[in-house]
Structures are given as structure tokens and as C-alpha cells.
Image (cartoon, one colour):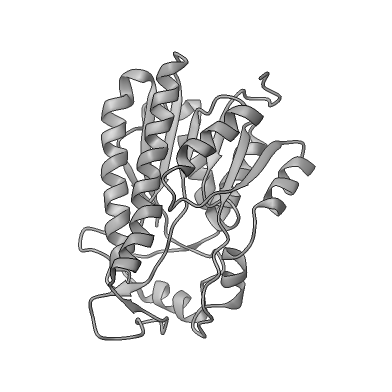
Length: 271
């Protein structure tokens, strides 16, 4: 299929229906990429400590994102993909290749985001509901944040080799830290595993012209940030900003550019 987009690049962005994923898809499209916007509507339970806007954002489709991209002259398609299903990785690449062309940019942004904890508390320090760690919370988190990125990277590499390509970019998003992620323990552990996969990809795929990096965003206002969260950031000695999703997307888009050819195997912490 002939490329219909300015840069010749094709990107898959997961979790592209809102927040950082939506901002990244739109920014990549502005810079000439065709974008497959993968998403999965998630219907969270009502929690008085989490703004209703955030629940609505997570339950949305990526159709408005695609419409905005096309209105601005870009090329994009949306696909509702259940990343808990191992077959979804191949399906995403198949659709991208059929409708847009060969994929050479992969942004692993989606998250299962389950707040679980080993502690007996049912609320975290911001008053948000926390569940105990169970097989169900572990499975949801690790399937979306670890298994899916690993399979997507595998598909990316396999198809890159098959077509004899020499340029590729992989960017993932992470959170938590070296001391874990109290209150979101499965999320933190799953993201740590994704970091490990991505660093391995950076080393193994470098001879193929592929870079692989992780971005650790600051607190980013994707709809969940409350006055309490802003106060927490203001009083923190390690958190400096509440970012807009597009600010994080600017870093992701740079890592997906020609200018970032020597940046690989890094976890880039934004503050």
C-alpha cells in the first residue's frame, strides 16, 4: 500500500483515546506520521476521590482523536483492542499494515491501572479506593502493562526484519520507582517488567537500527488530578510539576524522530 502521509512513518499508539496517548497520536500526526490509535474503553467504578472527568476519559473511544487528526489534514485510524488478549498484538500490526503501511514507530502507552496494595487500608493517601492484591488485579495489570508491550515489541521486531527495514523507534511509559509503588503495587511491578523488556529490546535490536526507551512522566493531568494531588506535588521534594499531556507527548515524539538516533536504552525521568 502506498504511503499517503508526509513523513512516510507509521505509528501504533496504545491507550490513544485520552491523556498522553491521545496527545502523542495527535502530535505524531502533526509531524507527518500516519497513526493507528489503539484503545479500550474502561468503565471504572465511581470513586468520590477521582474526578468524574477521568472516568469519562477512560471510558471514551479514540474516534474523536482520529477525527481531530483528519480535520487537521493527518492520517489516522482507530481500533478497539483488548490488550489482555495475546492475539491483539498481531491484530494491531495487521490492521496498521493494511490501512496505513509498515509500522516503524511503537508507543506502548496503555495501562491497565489497578490500584492494589498489601496493606489493610481501603484508601490511599489521596483518599482513592485501593483493592487487595489478588490474581485478578495482578492478571489485569500484567497482561496490559507487561505481556502486551512484550508481544507488541516482538511483532515490531519480527516484521522489521522480514521487510529488511533499517529504522525503528520504540517508546514505552513507566511509573513507580526503585522502592516499588506503594498503593499501586501490581502497576509498579508490571511497569518495572516493561522497563526490563524495553531495555533488552534496546540492546538486541540496536543492530537493526531500532532505538528503545522508556519515559517516566511527572504527575500528568489526564483528568485525575485534584487540588489534593496538586498540593501533594507542591509539597514534594521529588515531584516538581503537574504536566499537560502534550508536554509529555513532545518528549515521546522527539524520541520517535531522526534526531534521537543516539538515544536508546534509557529511562527518561521527567519532573
